[in-house]
Amino acid sequence: MLSSFLAYGDKDNRFKFGVGALYVIKKRPRQVVNLEYKTDIEQLGQSPYALTEDNLMTSILRRNPNYKLTLVNELSGYYQKEWFSGFSNTLNFNFKKIYPSDSIPFKRISDGSKVDLVQSFSLTLNTRFLKDEKFVTGEFERVSLGSKYPELNFEITGSVKGILGSQYTYAKLHFNYYHKFNINPIGYSRLIIDAGKIFGTVPYPLLQLHEGNETYAFDRYAFNMMNYYEFASDQYSSLTYEHHFQGFFLNHLPLMRRLKWREVATGKFLIGSINNANKKVLEFPYGMSEVSEPYSEVGIGVENIFKVIRIDATWRLTHLDHPNIEKFGIRAGLQIIF
Image (cartoon, rainbow, N blue to C red; front, side, top):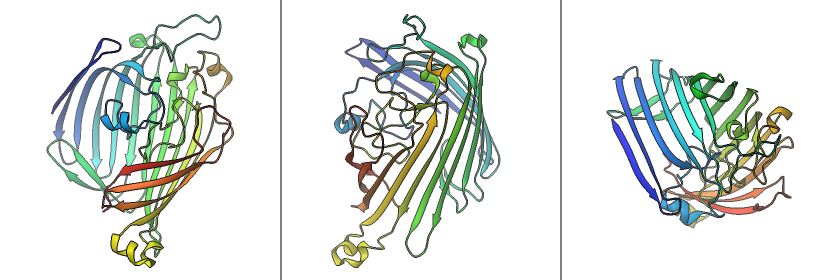
């Protein structure tokens, strides 16, 4: 399967483009090879499930000026082998050049001199396990239908200075736990635990830039009241808990029961730190700090509006003295409930 895109920016007068190829060696158990190259502007620290920056809805729903974008050249690829249904390994390589901008400059702490780019080459080995996982499979892609068991992901990433132009030696460990489970008779819950640690000295673009959201679109996998570049860590852990009441309360109201609207509650929590060596590589962007004091936000919402709309009211509970933040906000999203 081949893919490509082409775009032109009338402010920076640059073409952006990307090409990719996915080759399916075997469908069951799955075995694939993927290769991609792109040069494009990105929002570092954005959830991979968020609306992309070139999406029209991103511009319409944006709540802050869009000045934190960064030009990235990236060559990446992976080989994925599924040993049996629900258990797989993925070996990924990533060669990346990250360029500064007027709004997001790269300056050395030691002498204030400018840095032209941050460059790295890394290898990542991912191990994923989800017992009794079910899929809907097409010719090239597939969608997981999940399982009653928790999903476990463990990743180890390594980079060595000097190999293929990498400027830094470091290692990363990352663990993710996801579980959807029923709590009868009051609905079901989703629990996500995420933790990681970086060994070695790296500049802030290679730290864990925690996933913020500067739009009014709801993102389940981001902190919806956190700004981009607000928090970074070299060791961290987070917890997301979301409970879907499936109409446990609203079904007592005749109109709500007929509309089939359903209530949902969410809590998100994060703690992390940055060691002194990483703080002294590059100057942090304005407003960026570590999150040694826990960050938290909570929300309540209604889903299944017209079958596909979800609206959440969200409160930020901590770090209320940070600049340009919202303490309360309304977020809307699209989702299909099975």
